[in-house]
Length: 245
Image (cartoon, rainbow, N blue to C red):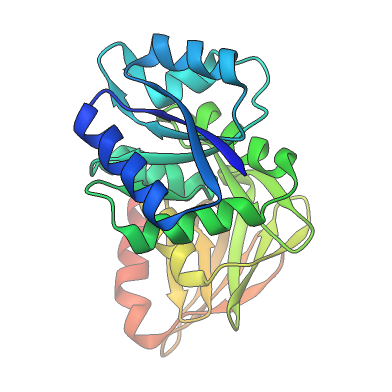
């Protein structure tokens, strides 16, 4: 049985989640509830849960603030939040799952199953480290691979290349990491951070562009020596972004 604590300042939200867990997730028991950051910390310390359902916005701080105050996180976390653009971006960069309010029972079941399948608490802690460490700056990203979780500085990513349902991430150190996510997901995350998808299979960091060669679409030479084709239909947008950088 997975022992859980619910931390949410809204009583209605706690009641809904507790009832859904009782009805749909028979392997999860709710051992305690907290209605703010302070009481949440007390309940976690008192009950030592396996899993915490954690709201983001509370009267005395955020769920992120709560995690910052715990010296050693030895439990798994599922965030439960109303739509918050910053929070959703933070979750994507840290590769952490979350539930949006109002809670959908099917998504709750899926989230509990995913978190239950994770045996290595260290991998969870690595993701939380990125989440807490970014603190609005989004300097690091968690890259889930077959070997585990890689914590990488975004400024060190030279380019991303699609390989079926995987993505190869090439770093300035020369290291390559095969990530278990599609290029589309990294396109959405990194494009606002001076990356550009020059081709269906390539997303590049504009900071590492060494030279652009003209042509129908042309191609770029990156600082790591790689030559990347620029798709004809993406050429105009790419050159426009390159001149702004």
